[in-house]
Structures are given as C-alpha cells and as structure tokens.
Length: 260
Image (cartoon, rainbow, N blue to C red):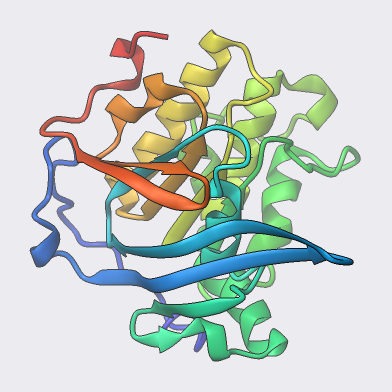
C-alpha cells in the first residue's frame, strides 16, 4: 500500500477540470466495498448500521453521502477511514484488504493515507494555526509545509493566530489544512459545516472543493443537507444502512451558487 509505505502520492501537474464529470472507468479505483455490514450489539439488542453496502470510490472525485441521522453514513465513513471495522463484508483500498488489517497497520493507514475533518475542530488552544498544522507535518513521511497547507485554505495571513483569535469558519479551515498537509489520497469530512452558519459554511466548503480540484484528493462528505448534493460529482443517498439511490451530476455547481 503506497501511503502506508510512506511514498508520496503524486499530484498530476495538470489536474482535470473538476467542474465536469470524470469518466469513472478512466480513474483509478481507490476504495471498493462488497456487502459491507455493521451490527452494534448491546446485550441482546442489535442495531444494524450498515446492511449490505456495495460501492466504489475513485481517485479525484467528490462524493456526497446524503441521509438522515441513523442512515449509516457516519458508519460507512468511519469504516472507509479505518476508524472502525465492518462486522462482515470486504473493503479494499487500492486492492489491499483493510478488513484483514491489524490495528498497527490501520494506524499507519490513518496516519499516512487519510485526512479527517470533523464537525468540531479539535485544535490545540495554546498553539497557533501554523503550529496546529505542524503537529501533522512533523510526523508525516512527505508533508506539505504548514504555510503551504494554510495558503490552500485561504489563511496565509492568519497562520500565526491562536484558535481563540479565529472565527469558527477559520478554525475549521485550519482543521482542513491540518488534514491535507500530509498529502493524503483521501479526505473524509463528517458534517464539516454542522456547527457553522450558512455564510461561514460556504467558505469552508469552498476550501474543501479547492483541495479536491487542485490537489486531486478523493473527497467524501457526509451531510443531511440536500443542498450540498449539487457540488458533488456523485451523490449517494443512504437509508436504513443501505445505499438506496445514486446520482451523477453532469456539472458540479460552485458552492456559492447552491440554494441553501
């Protein structure tokens, strides 16, 4: 597995126009899941979070997982990121079986291959934006400079500010910079605008979209906000632990053109 071995995931010198759909058959398959199931057990009670999911995710695409609370989208995201394992089924990352990996290998996978963005920013208050990002770049095998990552999210002028001196949207953009500074092949975003107002959320989503477009990172966003579907290459609707509908957008809408 290339990321796990610490090799650089190279960015194409000229990235495709991500406002237009890319033929999936021409893009490398990053994740391939077959019959993924996840059952949580508490005593004699079973909760089925995923119920036979078959899906693939391709290099460079932006995918929105849409569904209400309890639909299974967070569980699927956690399994893709190596934070959880399915109860049954298989998940391959570039042909490498994640479901057979031990915790040591999964830790390396999370560290080197995947960037995570959560609803809450999890920044260290006593460190500047630059220093928060540097926490990742100091342990990654081939990272960006913290300054480069912060420039990508539009915070070049704010990198020496502490979290308390930044707005909520700026703090989330620092979290995005931290996630992408290690050059992950995959960026997983769990309700990245859930704690933000609409205007601030638009700024954050523009940063995510820019990373996908300019760096070519496979980006998966989970949300219950249907408006975000129009910014994606592909939309997967989840309900009761299953993908019940899949839609491809002929043209991705700019974030500021979405109807909120």
